[in-house]
Length: 166
Image 1 (cartoon, rainbow, N blue to C red):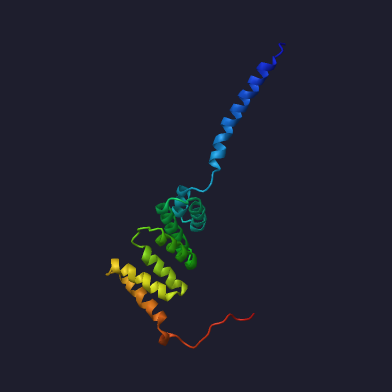
Image 2: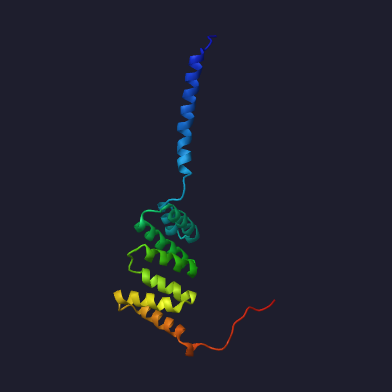
């Protein structure tokens, strides 16, 4: 048996260390944080709750790119809209408006979510902004009429709905 020298042992240990690092590196990269492509795939599969969480993580990571932040906010609003979470959807749509996202449906989606929340005055403004660009849209006209009815005090009743005590 030949005895290894100390120098040969160090070289073998380095080689093993490099080999170990090279094999573990792809695993560490695969465990990375949230990505926009992942959220888009989740949304395409119909996993709106998971997609909204992933969009939120990506949105919080993106600080400087205003255009990308607006796009992410709009997609996050779409996820919340499909989950019938109108408060979260309207907050996300308002962030998209603030960052100057240019989707033509943004004002309509914002108006619908505000309308569902019971915030009729801002919903009327959003419907009117959408109708300024798309005057023939029947859905927006009906929504505007409904929001205006919600503002009308004559249409309100004296009935109060309360939760039943069980």
